[in-house]
Length: 438
Image (cartoon, rainbow, N blue to C red; front, side, top):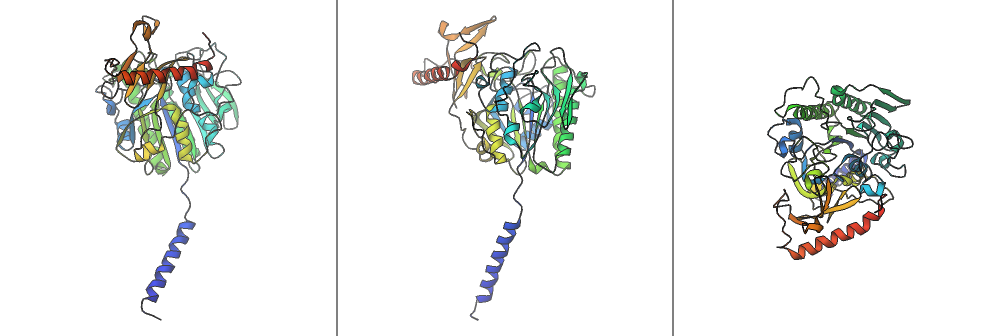
């Protein structure tokens, strides 16, 4: 045998053995997904977002261990449309739910033809929605088990609406209801969510924890009441923080934290209390960022890098395509306005959007690009104010001026023309889809 033949043969055998081991190694399972959706949580309500009055150590830690997005938008400035956008990956006007919020006397809801994240993940994922639904509380839109969720435990709409009961559906039982113990709601939602996780730890699962807090009215849990420097509002936010810490602790104890992605965000900006941080206006404010820009944290040890801050533009309609990408599932065969953010979260890529459209009910009121924001409508003393009528349409450099305080239209006529054209195109594209015609 010639010199060097034995070592060379050993290298070949070692290489073949390694290939065999690689072939035999199981593929990494699709990740579990948990979306914690707060109700009316403000952009500035977290410590990591600048709050000095509310203590959120667990959410701050989550942000440090994951990716925080600074320019993440809800798809509406109020509840029902925003939730429709999140669930379907589509601008809410496509779903028929862009106008106002569903009231207890209403009989509309999310059409069964719409494909939710839960439906798109079937049959590979166990699915649950725990908390507030607010996308229709009469047949055929109700309960959420009509929309791909195996389990529902929660409320039909906001907890300040009446009549109100706490419902359970799924898991082989008919829908049941019980009285609502308001101070216990957040605790009970997390209790039920954690039980769902425990029950499905051996398979991929998708859980939406759709909280009622910190939407008014405020009902702090007795363990948190009177603790926050921001009074009752701060108490309920600090309870959310504690429960998120409990969630991640449980995932680690079950040994599935590295198989799980947790996303924390809000359905819109703050209402009567809470902070929109440096942003202008708040929930319901037409056009201005305070009603739309919300906290966003994505945490996934081993899948999402730690300590990253992304300033790319994104929206809650992006959750469906992003979750589909993480799950290696195809998109629904319908028009999807959202875009896959996985490269943004994992590699720090640029936003897949060149613009985001902001609606007030069924009207297009603003357009956001990476640097610029064009605002066409506001409110004044209960009047919807078309800013063009008073020569007040605003062009704002939101990178330099997040408060949208200074209209730069006169300094950048070329940018103004581009943004006006974008707005006109968005109006022509989307407003005819509205159910309420002029």
